[in-house]
Length: 288
Image (tube, rainbow, N blue to C red; front, top):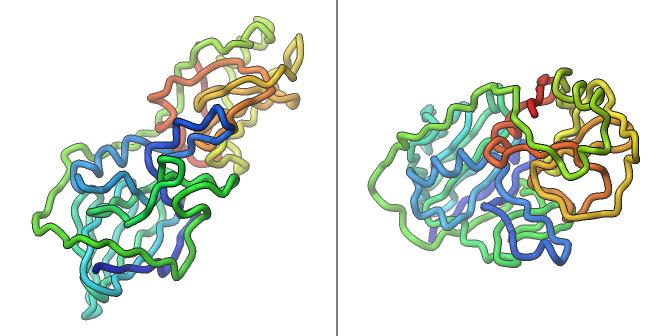
């Protein structure tokens, strides 16, 4: 049996997979990985990941092998170090396989000019799915582990580590794209031509109130000439809602399943991963 424990959580460390998509009609959020590109690249290095990843934001965790050995790979723009049992320290590159043996401690430092990073484990984390998914929704307390991870949390991986080492040839370049193509939202007609022109010509700043549920933006207010309230209806990641204060919200992975604010536009699904990596303070613009 191979065992490791969390010795430092970093920031907002959770178990995630691709999402929980069969229960939205019951009010359950899909949740899941914020930046799909990184685990897709990690899957080339750790093919038997069992769809179980650790996601962290801004500051990475530390984990220590207590028994046996595990193979991992870390994805994202971050510095990665292993403190060996003999007290030597080795730096590793992202998107490469890392063999950790008893007594070794993996430490991941701050993400660089980005937000999210990921760890994939050979043979997964030994978890049972919750509602057909391993994803964590901390607000609803749903998931294989229904909360952010804590120091002292332990995992057991039953299978032995494979001996080969792999490296991904699809390292993710987390570009600083700040202009995003959007498509008309179902309530775009709630906004005048003048407001729509403001929407596409003025920059918006990502605020510190942003989280896995949505990116809260600040800029020139977008006032509706009809109403800032609608009958609640289904929503998806990428929808851009405009509440009564006129400051748009880009909905992300932990969305509620319904929303009652008008949706001025919808972000392309492939851009959700890109915009998720932009830290607070970044100015973004939209093109219709």
